[in-house]
Image 1 (spheres, helix red, strand yellow):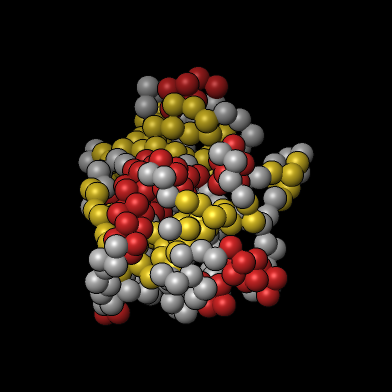
Image 2 (cartoon, one colour; image 1 turned 45 degrees about the vertical axis):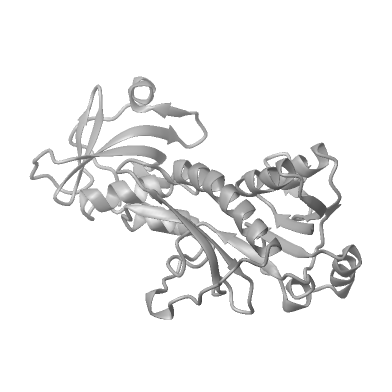
Length: 308
């Protein structure tokens, strides 16, 4: 069976790797075009392209997925199946080409958290469980019939980055099982329950500022749900502080939300109904540090405020 694999970020690599390890033929890998990145604006390749080139795979990088030339290039490769993991929205002119169809791996238990940021949104919402779903592509994004799902718990202090890595590995196994089942014509897809659907839209920087008036558990979920990227932040006397890890604290207080309650060995900040202990911080333009190291080089005092 010949597969076209489509993906761009690190999340997609375990899925591509497991297909190769199981001797499944990869006709081509489709990924994002090279683009300038970083302060020097040097041309960078996607994580999937770097992996594919290292493994000697054919790579396609269309500027537009709707370009008829791209559809023709796909047709000439005669794929039996398309496997899509963390990629762009494919038009029907492309995903309808393979004789066995096209399926996508999504980092949520669909129909919950459809969209670009399912991992972040699930943790921010305080979910205790997440997972992955494979589904057949259709015209509406993330709405196709479900093939397989796998579940995993979200622990109280788990960050989005940690859940991302867990789901990438679980997802790879599900991609392999899905591929084998489709090859053996052993698939009974089931429609998604539209009544249970929820969205997970992309998160923008302006959404990432901490609101200390919210309850301490909401603030904690917000911080870990945005860590390490796009990252929650707050301000101390006009200086932006990026926050990567936190811990809930039921320390009683009667102070205004955002008040620094302690800043010696630990950094404890008042929030609604309790407090949040910040464990890992980064001053803008500086290194990311554990709070004990951060406080050695950054001056703040109990009674000062972090701004919502």
